[in-house]
Each structure stands twice: as structure tokens, then as C-alpha cells.
Figure 1 (cartoon, rainbow, N blue to C red):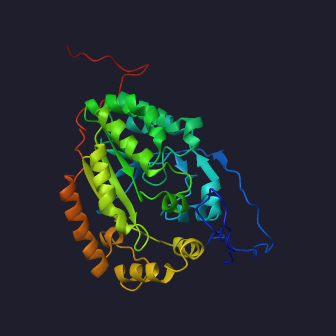
Figure 2 (figure 1 turned 45 degrees about the vertical axis):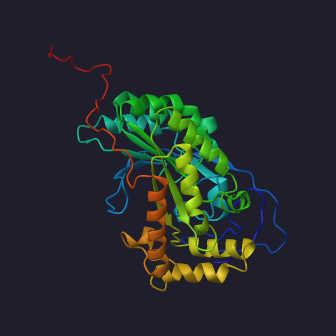
Figure 3 (figure 1 turned 135 degrees about the vertical axis):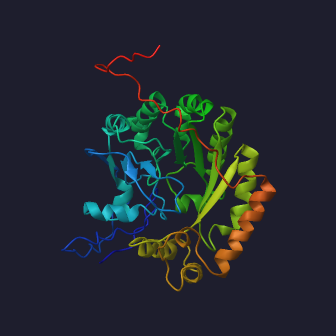
Amino acid sequence: MYSIVIRMKGRGAVSNPASRFNLQVTRPDPSPPLDRIATRVRTEPSRTIITRNSSPDIPFNLSINPYRGCEHGCIYCYARPGHAYLGLSPGLDFETQIFAKPQAPQRLEHELRAPSYRCQVIALGANTDAYQPAEKRMGITRQLLKVMNRFSQPVSVITKSSLILRDKALLAEMARRKLAQVAVSITSLTAETKRRLEPRTASAQVRLNVIRELTDAGIPVSVMVAPVIPKITEHEMEAILSASREAGAVSAGYILLRLPAELESLFADWLGAHYPNRRLAVMNLLRQCHGGEVYRGGFGRRMRGQGPFADLFAQRFARARRNAGLNARDVTLDTSQFRPPPQAGDQLSLAI
């Protein structure tokens, strides 16, 4: 697999390695690359939209992702390797080749009406951000929320975008019935660090304002310090929790940086471009947390790691969360209200 380092304004990845599934790989053109790549949004059909998982270390069993790929360009995104299944690169392709699912609201309604469906909280945007830039034009996430509201289907949204404020009234209506909560992800309060890590995301101050506005609207909000990156962002954890509590967050969690599949080389390239003097230290600390490997899967340990650094950080986080007055758990949403609304052709009830 060949890749060249490309520093491009407004993009997170600094390389674009070929998909690991490509049988034929072409060596990149060594000539100077373009200084800009336009984002292309394509649509893809959706046969199903609710994804099910049984991972014991993930706090939800059902999720929906209206988009594949994400223009936010977060270099650490664990969804990047998924682009390889499309024959595309998890690097720059992931943040410039976006696939939208405009049929998602219709598919969701169909799946919620299935006799076999049993209501559970649905996580919205668990893989890629449901409020990434394409959403402003396409509105798929908003339509999904409208369907959930009509069905009284509880939803948990995670985002790092201020676009969620567009749907504040809708989420507030659901939250009044204990059907909605929001998690805002904050990785760094430092503008330069944020720009390098997450080039097309809202600033930390804007995200804190999102927490404030959603809280004022009656929507319970948690903060996710995610991912925690040794030697890059981990020292900001206490400040992030304190600022988030002041803005109105009620609970908090964290996830240690995860580097599955191609993400290891993508992140190493990024470190070499932005933090060359810290590259070795960062990667060595990650190896400490994963038994000598940069990343090791396995339920439980993949999210938090093991070893001295991981244990000390867990203790720091617990103390800082307690000092900030933040809860360890999110608000419990109500699944008992779920009711598919009547549709044309339904038999009238005989109940009085």
C-alpha cells in the first residue's frame, strides 16, 4: 500500500492510502498534489436503516447513521476504515466522498412498524456525525427525528456540530416526554489543536454554547471527552469537564483513542506532519495501553485501555467528574410510550 503525505487546508487526513481490498494498487503520482479537493455527496439506497449490535461495552443496541463518510475530517474517526469496503481510501476519500441515505426516514418508519420490532433507545450518529455539513442541505437527520417523534421512539444523539440547534424545538418536545437526550463531543478547548484534529467542526466555544442552549431548552446533555489522545489532548480533560458543567451538562464520559485497521498508519502520518516531536511518545503510550500493540480490540478494554497510563487516567477522570458535579450515567429515556401512529388502511380499534 503506497501513500504520500499531503498537507491540505481544511482536511484532517494527510494521506490517502488505497483500500485494503483493492487487488491492484497504483503508486501515487509524486508530483505536487492539488491544494484542495472538493467534497462530493452521493446518494445510496437503503434496504434497512437500523443497525443492531450486541457489544457489551456500547451503551446502545440500535443505531442509525444517515451518512457514510464525514466531512468534519476528524483524523481519529474510527469509522474511517469502513470506506475501504467501498473501494475508497479511509484517508482523504473518507472526508471528501460522502454517501447520504435519503430513503432513511421512510425505511425507519417501515422498520418501526414491523410486528417484530421491540422499542429500545436508538443512537443517532454513532458512526459518523448526523449533523455534518451535508445535513444542512439534505435534512435527513431532521426527517428521522420527526418520524421518531410521531412514534414516541426515544433517541440519543451524539454530535460536535452546532447544526443540531436547528432541531432544538423538536428535540425539546421529545425531551419533555423523556424521549431525547444529546451528547456533545469535545476533544480539545485549544483552537489550534482542534483545527488540526477536526478541521471542519465547530469550535469548542461554539460546542459549549450548544450545550448551554440545549440545556436551556430542557434537553439533557452529556459531554464526551473523546477521544483522549496521550500527549496531545489528555491534559485538557479537567478543563473540558469544568467548562461543560458550567454550560449545563449533566453527565460525562470518555473514550481512549482507538486506531483499528488503516487508522494506525493514517494517525501516524498525521502525527508526523503536525507533531513530529511527539510521534514516538504518543504511539508508545498507546502501546502501553494495548499490551504492546497500538490498538487491540476486545470488549471493555478497547474503549479505555489497560496499564499504568490507562488506569491513572481513569482515576483522574473519575475525580474530575466528581469535582465538576457530573453524573456517571446519562438520563434514562422512556421506551414505554412507543406507539406506531395510525396509517391509511389500519383497522379501527373497538376500544372505548
